[in-house]
Structures are given as C-alpha cells and as structure tokens.
Image (tube, rainbow, N blue to C red; front, side):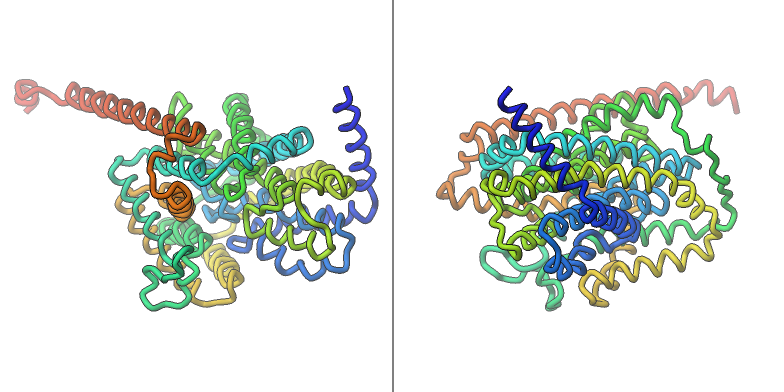
Length: 517
C-alpha cells in the first residue's frame, strides 16, 4: 500500500508538470517534428535532436527533455510510413518493417498496414511507459547485472537467429550474415585504434553508416526493381473500408503486438541494445512461433505489428538506463544526457528521488505524446496512401531527392551518397540471386557489438573461454541459442525431405510419360 501511495503521488506530480501549457506545447512540437522526420528517409532522430540541441540551453530542463523525447519516439511512428509505402526505411529500426509492410502495400493494403503499425506503436508505447512507471528501479538493477559475457551471449543468439529470418537457402542466409559481419569490421579498432579494411579512405575510419546500408539495400534497390512495368500499375483510391483491417488481421496482430512490446521493453532497458535490435529480434521471434512462417516476406501482418511494437516500446524504456543509470544506450540518448548535464542535473539513481518533478513530468508527457501521435497519424493514413497513386515517373525523382537529402544530412559528406549507390547495386545483385537482405542488416548491427563484448569478456576473465558458460545468465542464453539451432536444423531437414517427397510423387513415372507421348 505504501508503494501504491507513493506511485499515485509521483503520478500526480508528473501530471502537474506534463499538463502545464509550456510542456504541452513542447510535447506537441517534439511529437509532430519527430513524426515528420521519421517519414523522411535517412534523417532520423539523431539529426533532428542535434540541430535543436542548442535551443534546449534556453529552456527549462523538463521542457527540453519533453521536446527531445517527443522527437525520439515520434520518429518510430513516422519511420514505418516510408518503409511500408516505398520500401525505404525512415529509420534504421524500421528497416525490418519493409519485409512485410511493402508487400502489403503492393497488394493494395497500404492503409491497413499503416493503421496496424500505428495501433501497434500506440499499444507498445503505452506498455513501455507503464514499465517505466512501475519498474524503473528494478530494471535498472537488472541491467547492471548484465556484463560483457551476457551481452556476447545475447548477440550470438541474435546472429544465429538472423539465419532464420528468411526463407532462403541456409547457405545463402549464412553468406548474407558473413557479408554483414565483414562490413561491421570496417573502421577503427575500438581497443587498438588500428584502422581495418578502410583501403585508404579516411571517411571509413568511423565505419560504414547503418543508414546508408539500409537505404541502399532496401530503397535504391527497390527503385531500380520497380522501374520495369511501373507505368502500368493501378492503385485504388483509399476509402474508409479499404483502410480498416479485417477480423483475421486483428486476430493475427494482437499477440505479435504484445510480444513485440515485451521484447522492446526489455531490449530498450539494456544499455547498447536499443530499438533497432529489438525490432529485428521481434521479427525473428514472430517468424519462429508462426504456424505458417512461409507467409513472412509476402505481406504478413505479424511482420509489421511485432517489429513496430518492439521499436516503440524500446524507445520508451531506453530512457531508463539513460536517466536512472547515466548510461546512454545510443548516440541520441547521449544527447539527452547532455541536456541534463548542461542544466547541472547529474543522471543516475539519485535523479529518481532528487528530481521527481523532472522524471515523472517526462514520463507522463510520454502518455500525452503517444496520444498526439495517434491523433495525427490516423487521419494522415489516407493522404500517405495517395502517394502510391502518383505516376512513377514523378515519384521516382522525388524519392531519389529525399534519399539524397537524407543521406547527405548525415555527415554533410557526398561520400555517403557513393556508399548508398554501392549498397543499392549490392542489393540489386542479392535480390537477383535470391540472397536475403535482412540477415545482412542484422549481422551488421550485431557484429561490432559481439566483437566488443567478446574481447572485453576475454580480457576480464584472463583469456578463459569458460567465462561464457560459468556465468549463469550467459550460459543459459547460450544454451537456449544452441537448442534453438538444433531445433531449426531438424525442422529444416524435415521440411527439405517433405518437399523432396512431394516433388518425387508429383513427377510422372516413365511408363505414364511414355503413354502420354
């Protein structure tokens, strides 16, 4: 009862802060700007927050955090729009949404995909906020128990799972993973400072940018693939009925939304994990638990709702390690941390007690921001769908322009444009040869993290590999990863044997073939 009373008191303090006219105004600005930034491919929350960071020096700390927070989680709402309509990830965490969101758009169900993505984001946002309210202190304590061995085990599990995302041949999936890992090694070694695989290009010393890979593989490759026969496509005008999901869509979407919310809440609270990893893991989980995994990649609503829920829940709980531990999980969260330090507020466990009005004002503003985003997004769905009816000869240069602007805005460097073109050509070749793209992206994200935590764990253990199995949590994760791999191998072998049997029974016998002749 004492805990509930304290919680009710904190909620009251937070509502008083969040509902002030000043904070309401900055919440509206942040959420609206975040949604628009998310729609533009390549720009992302980091760019928007970086540009607005100097303004926060002249604002009260709560208002500054409310605005930046709105931009941060608002981009997740907008990021799905470009992924679904144009196969161009608005944000890196929305890249996996392309796999099923864009096929739904090609089937004339873009409105349904956008509505389900918005609803999943809304539910996940509320779930993430609820987790923040109830378990901030507990989650912070759990996150502190995660060492390098546990993170390595988690990343290794993710790499194994990346091979299960696509329906492609297992060797092709492994090849995509290897390519992603190799791309992840480009840049300066974090321990020795030695440049690796930069081939004399100074711009590669910081590594390959994830945004250029995502836009190139999904966006540019899709543009090139869409040119043949693009003028003959017909897009029906959106109506209220066409935007409404069917009962089957709703039945298939609520469980992935809840699972994605839980996965996102967990990964968002882990420093260094974040929404991108959460969305990829969510997609993998949904495909593994699905009764018809062959539907994925062809317009499965589960492949839209799960990842979108995961990245939104992760965006909310990402504030837990940043505020409660003072450990930013992403570059964007590092800027949020910088706002606190500029205003002389030290982040850490004391923040939750010494600055109750700031923490709870920010948390309650998340409720308001998510409501604002739903109110803004749903009426705009029909407008977004109209984009598909624009003749491709006009749409193609407009998309290309946004790709160029978004890419150049990353580092104000034309080299990023060349990288996007190169990855676009790579995407075309991979698609022509039926190599899956998703494992490459996931391996690129996880590869550097896996290497970093592996080497750190080895240094801390004095070079003993046993540290990964002696620690209960890391050993359990590796055990689950091994068991999952064995189960998948058995499933794949049976599936291949079943296909061979069907092909054999379908083939006509020599006698029948002769009689037919």
